[in-house]
Length: 482
Ligand SMILES: Cc1cc2nc3c(=O)[nH]c(=O)nc-3n(C[C@H](O)[C@H](O)[C@H](O)COP(=O)(O)OP(=O)(O)OC[C@H]3O[C@@H](n4cnc5c(N)ncnc54)[C@H](O)[C@@H]3O)c2cc1C
Figure 1 (cartoon, rainbow, N blue to C red):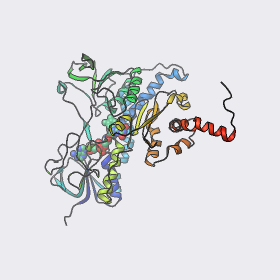
Figure 2: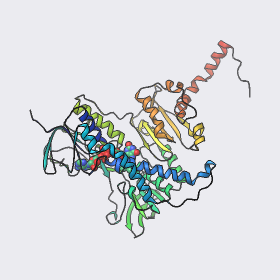
Figure 3: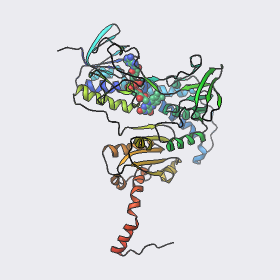
Figure 4: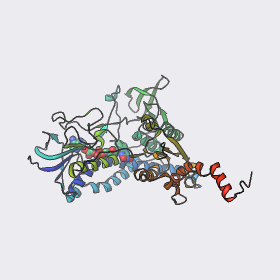
């Protein structure tokens, strides 16, 4: 039997790779983790979730300060934002979290960490910094990078992506965000709130294309009222560097050509898997434009080479990467065949209000041919929302024909937190009646979850049939007014 240096080798020290390295080492597997950059943590820590959510918080605080009057407070005379200070705060948060992802910590767990660019020599060995490292199993968890579309003039026009946006030297006066996905929309609102004039250009006919149109449009209207300009159904014809400004020429939905100008262009038009330089063509490992091709157990065409995280192009979230890390551990280390199942994968776009989703929305249910009914509840009917001054948005619950929850979308304050109750309901197959009957603390935003479930039952409970039965058995006397 062939022998290898390691039980498992992992390429990429981000969300997926770190989950696998930590788990494998703690299970007693001889583990090698290889990271291309100088530190562990990946995009989420350095250029993604952590800096973006830190920036969003800063922007929201500034927004609240600007609107102190809404809360019965004195008006504040604010100076403009010094983005270097904002960037410092972002870096300080990263530094704290980074400690958890240190080489030393992984070594203490039992995993060896090496830095450098590895290339597959054969199906079981990679070349790294002049040495050869072999492993019984490999995981490709090298993440993704911003995909920059082939726009005319892009090679000679400076632009930024999520790699640069958190360390700008100053706040741009104006910004054109190309793309209407979560990264673009979150950054658009954050920069707008900090004082940048923001325009978003989206090719599709709505922003946040994976979401139902009604929810995405409600969010877009809120963002418009906050001062952001949107061009949907608009393709970019060309970009040009005008010195202090950049020009983006757009063909809009009406077929008209519009010239937009801004100090900075943000490109956020999706992601591409980091697969270059790994030597995948030589072994070969199958991939396409989307990413690595894997089966439901996250195995590539070589059953001992797995993929996890953004490299598959499936669900590009940190929690999806962590989940997939668990699937790989189960299959590769524990030898328990386990398939990835994304039925109840939640996600959230962290705008204000947030837009969170789990399971089926109307688009996905219709595409899957699943009959459904929709139940909604508005945040403006939630007492806590009113007290918080955050009454925009609503919850939308989809039930299947057997009246089981198949999906929930929440546009509202702390939607990302609120959706967690549905994570438990849907994964635990909790009955809707149990949720409707469960006491929730008052006044909380979470009551909206109970209320939307109650909305479904109230029509049945307070029906004419029930009223008639109560009258018949208990001689109830009916209406006392009107
Ligand atoms: C602006 C932004 C905001 C985001 N916000 C959220 C959010 O709020 N919530 C959420 O769930 N997700 C969010 N995401 C997505 C999230 O960051 C990714 O889904 C997640 O980082 C994917 O984890 P991963 O392990 O696949 O990749 P990564 O975390 O990127 O890790 C991959 C690692 O592999 C390394 N690598 C690359 N090539 C090689 C190589 N050849 N050899 C060795 N190592 C290599 C990279 O340097 C990196 O460290 C956001 C993304 C962006 C861009």
